[in-house]
Image 1 (cartoon, rainbow, N blue to C red):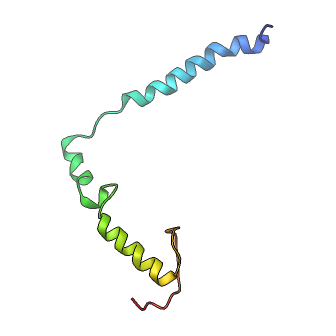
Image 2 (cartoon, rainbow, N blue to C red):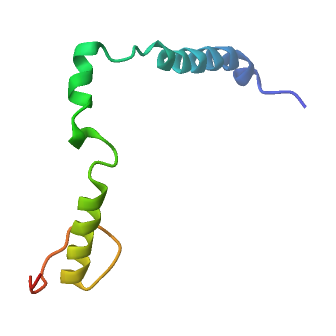
Image 3 (spheres, one colour):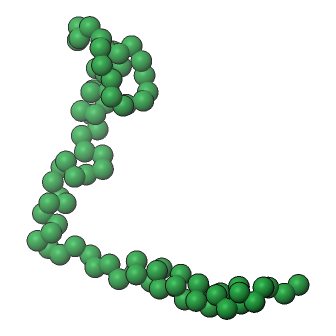
Length: 80
């Protein structure tokens, strides 16, 4: 079974375009020394303050009487 003639003409161009797009990701340079200062701040870390985050989640679930789904919430008595 043969491929249609349009695919035969477009396949090399499509493959070349995919290789060109994939190779652009390899050209990234690591951050320079003066750029690392902003990245080293505690609020820029992925897991910043784990204990503080768990405490805030505990207060949220206590006030909302619900667990999970850390989205926007409102209401609650605010007793804590």
